[in-house]
Length: 415
Image (tube, rainbow, N blue to C red; front, top):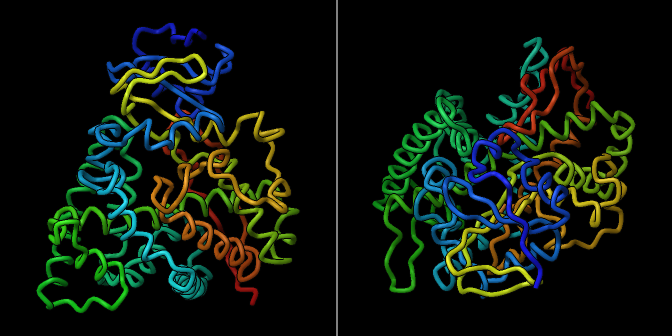
């Protein structure tokens, strides 16, 4: 039987916070193993990376999600009681609710709303001088996804609600003020959306047929009961928040266009090229670093022992940069996705496994659609200058972003 390497530090939380996205991969390379044991937040934890590990991690007979995400993450990012922490029939029922919203026509409609909002902002940007793409795109996405879901959002609220959604994302792994802002953003966001759900249920707020607001407000569980108001708010925020989080990927796409300008003309050439570019952005740049689960029942795998109840982390960033899966993983090469047919375990920027019935992100198709719209607009609908700024990505910061938020200047329409 193989011996599972054990991280030499008796408690690795500070090292995780210091090293961020590279914490798991650096130890896998140190120990020559894609499996090792450590302690995080004072709890024994097994860390994994790579395709075989991902296929194992998403086996529902081996792992469950209940109690896997830290309390800090639930109180900021995911919300307590949301789909991410469910298993079995409860998860399948709740995941089915989300998947019913992700039809191709509905995803295109959201893309159309985002494109309309973006084009409406270009004349404003022409008059604005220097601006931060991150903040601007976040507000575009907030306006569009609220319209798409049926959630009313007055123009005077856009900046505040976007900031609250940003805080939930930014504070999930942080300590100190960033985490406190995440807690406040979560509390305010749930209060806002719980009131919207209640108004939809009593009929004082029209909820369009097929909208996320209506589907979630009217969803009934296995016993025919409506979701509790707070849980319904958590799940509706699980549509709003991840959609707004696509602004990070849009910034990464703009950064890739800036660092690899030859791809600007190539992206304009057609949808297939744009999709290859978008997929490489998702592979190459860091989004969230890990996914968490717990061992359902003790088992052995490839000579490693997984005790019942043990927390397990899958390295998403490290799997997307695994040299056995991705030749020259630290090079940005969109052409690697030409003719690519998909891999639910080797490509895991938003989790792995299957969408239907599994724990892969229900909104992944939305992410791809909105990123393709964004790169098409950045390369075809406008031109802009990128002034000197700090565009370095600090991989110790989770989630990371260029410190400047990607400033642009001298925006002009081109179509």
